[in-house]
Image (cartoon, rainbow, N blue to C red):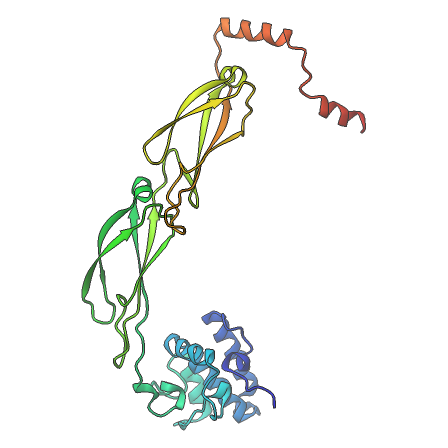
Length: 313
């Protein structure tokens, strides 16, 4: 026996379809199957039931949850659900009502999808989301913030202490169980999800627990080598020995000098220092003369690879 179609199958849309996609699919099918236009009355009823559910965010959410458990065994209709109501008016009234966004069969249809007593069963409240702004330094070391938010259903304000962990990343999420919207019919509260917005640091960038930075050096330091004191996110200083002949883009790694790893307690990322060789934009007469002498005395072929390629063209 073929599996029963669910509401998404009936409308011919995917389970992650947007509201607009659902509405467009219904209108196309409604015109095709409208009884007054010679369409199939039962088919029109099916697509109307599907649209009634999927166009309502709350009903769609409940329907998706039930689909995850295979629907309600032993019931007819799409996806294992049965509609037991009767249309009060003709199909034209139903279609007009749907297009106005008022639903096909009245505001009480769909509670529990025809399952007696389902409307009274406990339902968990929805999750709530808020964001908290922290500086880059606070994200490195961790910080605690008190935040106040409003419960949509009651309008009451609640305050919670948010512990932003050391090593927090931009867009990271903290979940506080049962601090969200109140449940219905005795159901438990939803969760509160706090998203961290970490400000940009003027020197350091993040790659998970690793911290990157660019270290400018002069052409003289790159050619001769040098030692540079480099700051770390933790406030310490490390000494970087830049070898003679270092090129732009060369990266040096300092183990355990990055940010705390929020995914692996007790571990710390690396500090990655990338050298950027800077060429002077303005030269004095003496500098220009000295560099010209060095250039004229330099017999190295820096573009030998390019010349070999050109010779093959």
